[in-house]
Amino acid sequence: MGRAGVRAGVTGVAIIALTLPLTSSGATQPTGPAASARRGCPPVPPPPRVPAGGTTVVVGASIAVGFHTSGGERTAWPHLIVARLRHDHVPVAVVNDSISAARLLADTPGHPCTSALHREGRALAVRGVGTLVLTDLINDIQQTPHVYDPHEITAGLREFVAKAHARHVRVVAGTIAPYGGFPAYEPAGERTRRAVNEFIRHSGLFDGVFDFDAIVRDPRQPTRMRPEYDSGDHLHPDDAGQRAMARSIPLGLLRPPAAHG
Image (tube, rainbow, N blue to C red; front, top):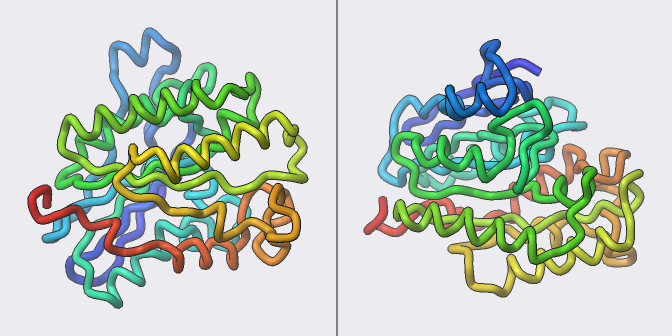
């Protein structure tokens, strides 16, 4: 996947959606731990201007880049939310720094700067950042090596939030959508998913929550996505699912308080 940029043609609202190859931020660069240490994580292109409500940076994975939707990034919820921001005259820029297959805790082997914990520094460096949205946390659970101890994941969430709060930046978290039916699904992973979701909802750690799990799960089979929202692989929402996720987001959570704006 190459990098693509899309900007909304409205005053005060912008989105720069990035679909990044795992090896770089759009340019060919050496990989590996030594290269990462020398180079640091590549910067995220900033919004063209910072409106009064500041910049929100989405730190996610394949769901946030619209994998298995009809238009990729253009049909993913971070892009769709811009239309709502425009309609409601909410002056917030949205930058999508999401990478397919990215995890929270660890980089993909051979591909530095892919974990959310490593990308957080570059997200905090985006001009005017006031809010980070941390989402798509399923990959620590469903990828190998599986992380089935929820305390490992919640410790990573605490680390992410502490770093942002030290910079007076808010963190909004998205709950983990169900993945029943996906080839990597296991009951142990489902227990971890539910435990992490309960932490996200009730720990009080976050400045806000997007309850994507509640929106897309099938009430008759809560380990699975609603059939009408399932792209077919039982992990990634389709266009309808992405639209439902975008509609569910309280826009106020994307705008930091005036003291941090």
